[in-house]
Length: 165
Image (cartoon, rainbow, N blue to C red; front, side, top):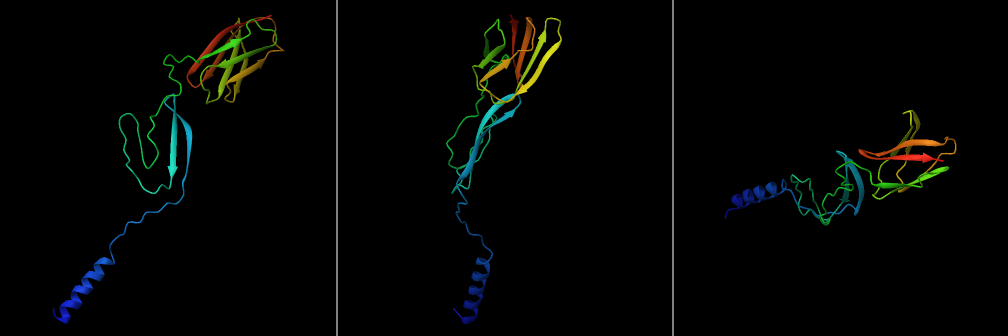
């Protein structure tokens, strides 16, 4: 091959390789998080991972499934599957003297709104509480009588008739 052809081939080869991309595998870090997300009156548990060494596959289906990287596949599950929108819990003691306990049989992940009405339908209590599995309410200032208690977390509701002695 002549010197001129050799020079042209070398220029074409080196100029084309200067514009190519190279694949580099890098890991920024191995951090992530997991948390609950509330959407459409349902709770979902999400796991996230940042900076994995490679991506396996990313896809989504009609069942809201998304997977990427080395996280093991988990199904999006409903934390509370009460389809009748009843909050599962119990209230004791009833009748009561000065306080009641409200214990929930399902996980509580959102604020709890407590409202109470007397027998004439007047609102006597309207309070919002942080998520707790056991809620203790004191009624030292309430008179003896019958009350209707309504406890709500998102769209789920627990109602009860209470008697104060």
